[in-house]
Image (cartoon, rainbow, N blue to C red):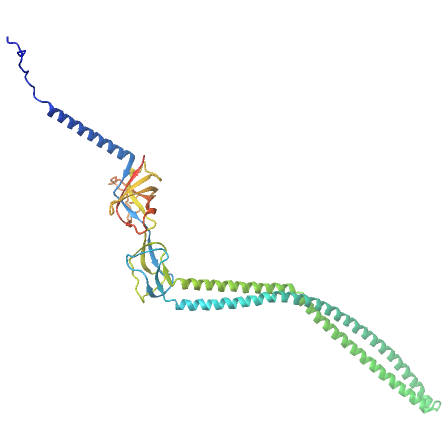
Length: 407
């Protein structure tokens, strides 16, 4: 049996190289590591973040209209022009509204003059009514004294009548006694004539006294009428506080008319200011339908202003993705049109699914119902957009891909 040991000086038989096997083994290991890393990355991505391609940029589309009727006399903007807030977009003919302002100013001046006059009359009325009350009181007292005096005069006149009647009776009696005596010549004709004259005189005195009584009674009547008049005047003077209150009310009414006229003036000035149509925010002019010499009416849409100041992302996540999404989570937003990535945060989760908010919401109460994964709108606000130029390239409606970090 031959010895397998090689003879001295001979080289042992060389085995086939194993380098290709090791290379294949290393390649397999690399592939396995790549698969593990890919699986780990997928797991991390699915566990620590949620993303969707059903998302777009949203913003405010401001419909610009006029608040008054008028004719366009000047246009200062063009289609797709960026304009800052406060820019005068167009101007309407201000002639009619300027005239309205002037009329309102005249009405305010007139109302103020009337109010000033009413205010001045308040203290004058107060002083006059007080003075009239005192004067009327004095007049009443004087009239009453006149009545008493007239009544006393009536009494005095009546006493004179009584005296005259007594004298007249005595004179007539004396005359009757003298008649037979004069016939018998007991007394002289002269004495009889004196008796006749005395009787006539006493009769005249009686008539005069009776006339005096009548005059005194008329005086009482006049005095009482004057007393009634003074009492009426006094009662009217007693309404002085009411007159002052009425004058105060007229003064307040005049002040209210001033305020009303001032309000009309303010409205006229507002209408005049509305002849200049001003941009309420920064934005881009679109859908401009405004032309020179065009008659526009209240509420007529003139153009649309796309605001670039307040933009956000509306991302429609599947309902199965909302388990770990909540307000305040950080978001990376990839913008397709620019290729840039912006940062943001979840602000709100919609109150209903998109299908419920559609024009024709689905009716699931049927026998052939098929479950469909719904999508819910989620609002994402940019956190780094404030540092961008106001004329940035983000526009409402652009497609984006947000990635929400949920863990």
